[in-house]
Length: 362
Ligand code: AMP
Image 1: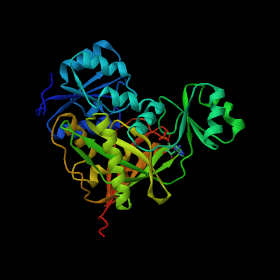
Image 2: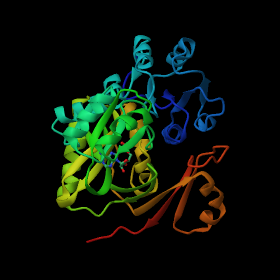
Image 3: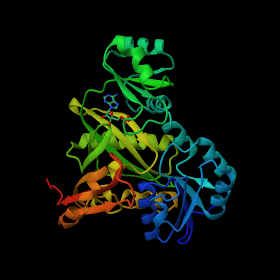
């Protein structure tokens, strides 16, 4: 059984081998921890900077057994880890953070929104649907256009389709594959914001300044932070994050995606039970970045300060964007982060760049 705070030299397990795992491993190394990556991918970009790597499916019993022998605590870098994997690790006596409830709630859009409303966090109106007729009824209730999303396993705008009119309801259901889904009323937002927050093992909470996010084709393209928002919006976002973290008895970093409505009211779109792409600006813009913060939280260390040191424009390098590395490296204000991925497939997250300027003081 793990004893907290974990001592330097301990091993932290991470399920998932992508760029988030890579940046977690780098942050952990700085604090003297070893990271063991479990990923089905043979040459995962996280594994190449980690002390240990296990290449196996997430539900491979031998792999989980091996991980439980070396890791004091296990966390994850993507949220579609099967819930039974977490249960299995816990059965082997391993501490998993954030816990299974956070993972389960975040894996299902209906459960997620139901949970949010249960903790007095506003969301768009929604209806759960499982057959074409339900979708028609949902449009009657919510109006069109509305957004149909699969309940599970959607990310970066995948598994989603707009329903433009009542007559399109049944065809839309076929477009997403006829699987259990959610119909969401269209949020009439003026901006998309996000708040990255962390909760430690003692229940302490720290929140980062908000980021303003710009998506293209459902994928995050840029984050500008700290976002220019009025104090009431920051306060509301902090309240929302704190409610979610507390209700889930959460340990670690969370990313909460927000819609800002006219007048400053916020709705939660969704939350990710992990470090988040819209928090990459903290790597160069804050005293303690989101990756170190997550490692601190799961290791039972005190959380670090989240104060901003600079204003950051974070730009994702998608696909061929990464070929610009040489020019980016010459930009004086640009901090370049490359993920060491081999193939620059279109839309693939290959790296990001943080462009710094002095904080606006007013
Ligand atoms: P998601 O996969 O839920 O993060 O959605 C991807 C993007 O689709 C969001 O960042 C928004 O730009 C847009 N979106 C999602 N849900 C809604 C909604 N209910 N109304 C309007 N736009 C939405």
